[in-house]
Image 1 (tube, rainbow, N blue to C red):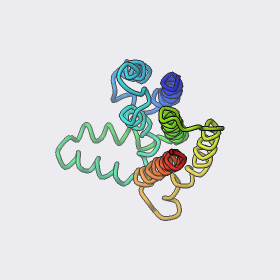
Image 2 (tube, rainbow, N blue to C red):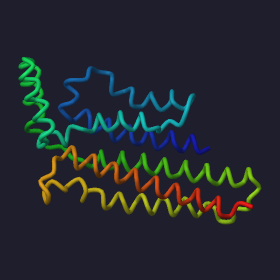
Image 3 (cartoon, rainbow, N blue to C red):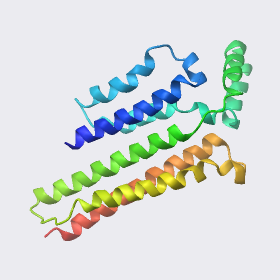
Image 4 (spheres, helix red, strand yellow):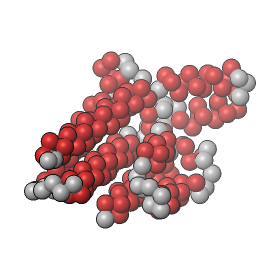
Length: 204
């Protein structure tokens, strides 16, 4: 059951990513129907591992990069590198496509939130299953799912502040976004470990 929930969350994340991608300049550089793979990959992954794994999440992040590229010094440095390597045509095309684009970072935020939520739910499920396999009574275990959701929702609300760090600290948008994502994932890991330690504490 947990894998079907994971698949559903992955497909929802793919939907938000697809809508963001088809309205971004990135679509001019990735041939159709590559974006349709966003919906197919989770189905294939279901046969081997969790549909919403870190590799699929990384792919979704790539398809959601367009909004944070225009004002990024890292992106400007990449353009300058292309000029230095004499890929002038590619550099001019990228600069023209992204320099005036003003998309929303909300899909990036939503995708990250969905991924972390999926990870937390799966981690809780594994902890509960492990406790039951070891014969440990687990009363009201499913309350941990509610706690996990509240935690991820809290970070979902705070995450835009991390993405806007550049306004206060003159930090590059790509770097600030990376810090925000890493903070998000670190919070999820800490919560998952706390649930695991709680299960170990009640083990005989």
